[in-house]
Image: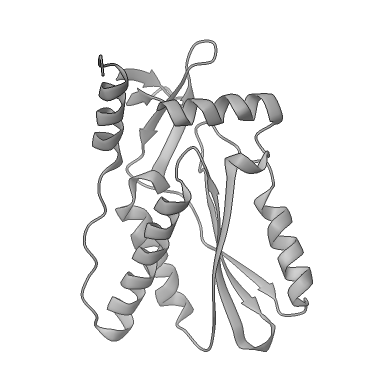
Length: 196
């Protein structure tokens, strides 16, 4: 762990990248940060009515519960990159209206969006949108920075959103807490530094 200074002059406890994060970061330097390996685009789609406000509330609560949704990266010396978890996310859930698009047009737009360059340092790493499609379909679409989450972690995050929504709308049990990120990262960094 190091103490990193942020652009606003404040300091945070920051940690080196894991070996898999280092590999992806070096690939982004070689191929560009819009390279598909760095971005994960994922959607969850359904047909029928839902409460948009409660869904947004559930998304924001899930972000508060998930450290990697609040992960930030800061540059060190040369090619060094460090990471830290912010207390509060500034991510805003967007509303997109695709009701005038065909399925093919919407798919093409989402694929293109998934491949856009993701800023990496001292900023939000992810984007989330609620989408209204034609014929009564809706979607929750996310573009995630792969250095912060993998596909399995994303599945757990989406599941948390849905469980929070069902808790708020149907009284189902409140979901179990998400596991903290930094202790898992520390364990991996300690293992890498060990003789094993």
